[in-house]
Structures are given as structure tokens and as C-alpha cells.
Length: 527
Ligand code: ADP
Ligand code: MG
Image (cartoon, rainbow, N blue to C red; front, side, top):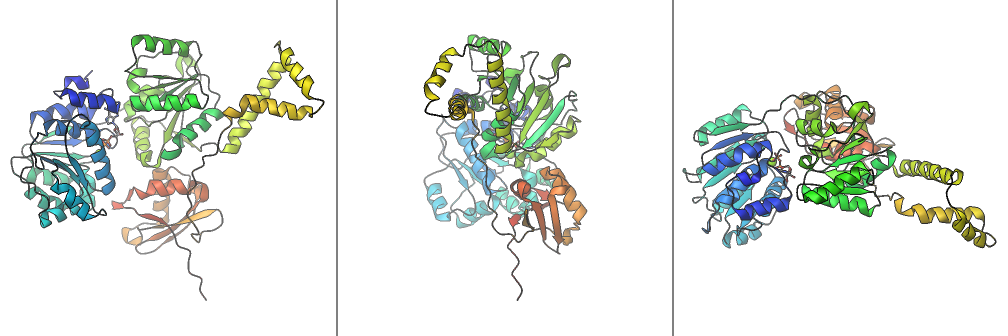
């Protein structure tokens, strides 16, 4: 197994990696980092979510020197990605003085010019705005030693080819050029041939893996209410012993704490714990004094506990192999097991890859509503009360309290107050994510969306329904009226899935075209 410490990275960067909570390099990182550190051009291909940013970000930050000039430039397709990559680079450079700056359209150029004047060593930008600065001579790339084209396929899709080439020509020819992409269409290879020197190629292909035959389901959740969704799911399951997977060590710590605060018996397990702490957690897990073990992939690797009833992917696994490893922790020795995966709209594609490569189908379920959770909780409380009353439990001291009260209060009120005392901390709270799409002119119970694709792309209703059921993971029954015009489409979807449709479609692509989704404006009434 390769560790981050095997790479020739300065200890300030090793410390930053540790703080970021990464336990071990992902496959693309394992192969790219040493090659980039050595020098030479490189093409890296791996699917989305596999850690390509740190694959170039770690060696990039390592190589930045004290020189006061733009030494590295990263081009990304969108403003969001520029900000995201810039954030990740800052975390990597936490203990090293490196001045980084994201530059993108939509932000005041004056502000960027001032920041550039103060001296920046690493620029992360979208091609349009970078070019703008080059033309204004507010950005100079003649000292650039490393050029990174991140998400290259997306940049080309968005029509940035010429801009990219103009930018590349402004950099010195002895630069190191890196190109990262999820896919490798012809145009990228052409670009690579034109501007890269004998590039090495690292391609992480997906090995086929077989998932065990256990019940596999997924829940569509939103990033901002993920915790609440998890709690509702847990509350609605007959959970004996569960392992909850998070991507990072920090994620484990945060989730464990949040679950404990909400009254769950949870403990965290990751590589930073001492052997003694680890043993203690594992013992309480085996003895069932805890019900949830929150862990990273690495930490859970060695675990072999027989009665794990649930594996819950709080963070979707980074690759199908890891999915298969994770879910293999349940359903041991012929017991019933269930694997639950939480999927945010952006992660829907990753789920489809996992399904395809692991040859399994995950059944889609909706996060239980607050009413459903309450109903289920009430059943549990009733059962607990009945077993107390029928059992041999010592109720006498409590009886005395009831006796003292029942002259002034009705017994049913006393009982309800007692229940509230016992259980109100476990009462689910309503953090329903309300998206208000306003009046969209839809039929009752539906939301009408405007989508910027139409007949000119040879789209017919069945195509659209197929795309949406796959991409968004909704049933075709949730789709209502579709009106396709030459260059746009109106589509109605049922209210309960509308937020998900909105989030998932907005970042997607249909027939190669980037999709823009907006709530429709109500039709103007004809008079
Ligand atoms: P990509 O560019 O391949 O789509 P990202 O670089 O955006 O993927 O990484 C996806 C997520 O995985 C980010 O949240 C990142 O912080 C996290 N990540 C990257 N490398 C690791 C690692 N070695 N261990 C744990 N998490 C990682
Ligand atoms: Mg990326």
C-alpha cells in the first residue's frame, strides 16, 4: 500500500494532507504525484470524484518557490471549479507561504487587478477571464513553470479551445504541462499533441467487480440536509449494528459528534486513533454498546464483525471497488444485510457508474417524511412501554410520583408528560429543504421547468424521459407534460422531486450540450 509519506513532499505539505483528513492516496494520485514531481508532461484520466485536484495540486504546491511571479496556472471550465480548486490548493498550502488567486468572470476585474499587483504565485482561472487579463497586461505568464488544464473535456465542450490555445502561447515553452480529464475525446488528444512534450499517460480504468447479493438501496438527499436525512433514514430502519462510511477522517469526527449530539450511540474510527482507542471502539461495537460505527474506508478495512445489519454510505464511495468493499461488511454468514447509499444530485452519475461496474441495481427510496418518522417512533415507544409494563421492571418509585399527581391531573396527561420527558430528545425535527420555485404555470402538484434544449438537438419526449429517469433517478411517473420547441423545452415534474430535478439537471449535459434549467415563468394570460 502506498502512503502519502512515500512521496517526496515537504513535511509542511504532509502536515496539510493530514489536516485535510486524507488517509491514503487515491489511485490517480498514487500514479501521478511521483511522475509530476519528477518533471515532464502528463495526461491524467480518471472519472469524476477520484481526487484529480490533489493529484496535480500536491506537486504543484511543492514546486512553488519564493520567486515573486506567477509560477503556475490552472485553467478550469467554470467559476465554481476555479473557486473549488483554489480552495483545495489553499488547504494544501496551509503551512507554506504561497499566494494563490482565483480569477473568473462575474467578479469585479478591478479587485482581481489589485490582487494580481500585490504578487501572486499561482493563478486558478477560467479561460475567458485569464485571457482578458493577458490582454490588459495585468497578468504575465512568461515565468510560468507549470500549466494545468483541469477538466479539459468540459473546457472544450464549453468552447474554450481557442482561448486555451491563446493562453498556452503566452507561457514559456520550457513549462511542465499537465492535463486532467474524465474522458479523452479526440480534440483533447489533438490539443495534447500540439502543446505537450512526450506526455506520459495515466489512465485509471475501472476494474469490474462483483457486488454481493444483498439488498441495496439509495436515497436522494441534498448536501445541506444530509445529516437530517441520515437521521430519518436510521430512525426508519430496524438497525441492529451499522457502519457509516465517510470520505475523510475529519468527516468521521464531525459526523460522529453530530450523531452523538442527537442521541445516537455512535463512535468514530479512523487512522489517527491510537491502537488502544481503536480497540476500545471495536470492543464497544462488538458488544453492541454502540449502534453506529462511523469510519473511513481504510479504518474499516480490517473489521470483521458478524452482525452488521446496515452499511450506510454517508459519502458515496469514490469508486465501484470501494463500494463493493464497503457493502461486503454486511450480510455476513447468511444474515440479512442492507446497504444504503446517500446520493446528492451531483453524485447521481457516480452512482450510475457504480451500478454499471459492480453490476448491481440500487433501488431508489425517498427519505422518510417527518410524519413517517414520527409514526415509526411512536410504534417503538409503544413497544417499549408495553414491555416495561408486562415485564418485571421496578416501577414502584415512579408509581409514587404518579400517585402524588393524579388528583390534580388526569392520568393520560401525566403519562404523556412522562413520555415527553423520556423521548423528546429523540423527536425528529423538521429541517425540510424548501425550494420555492414560485408560480411556474404548472398543473396542480407539479413544477414547470424551462430547459435550454429542444428539437434542434433532435430531442423527443421519450429521449428526455429516458435521460431524466437515468440522470436524476426519478420514475417516469413523476414527469408530467412536456412541450418541446425548436430551442427549448417546458417540462412539468411532480413537486416532491422538483428540487432534485433542478439540482441534478443544472449540472448535466444532454447530447453533449450543457443543460440550463430554470423554473418557468407562468404563461401570460391572453386577453
Ligand atoms: P475530481 O477532480 O477527480 O473530480 P476532486 O479532486 O474534486 O475529484 O476530489 C473529490 C473529493 O475527494 C474532494 O472532496 C477531495 O477533497 C476528496 N479527496 C481527494 N483525494 C482524497 C484522498 N486521498 N482521500 C480522501 N478524500 C480525497
Ligand atoms: Mg476535478
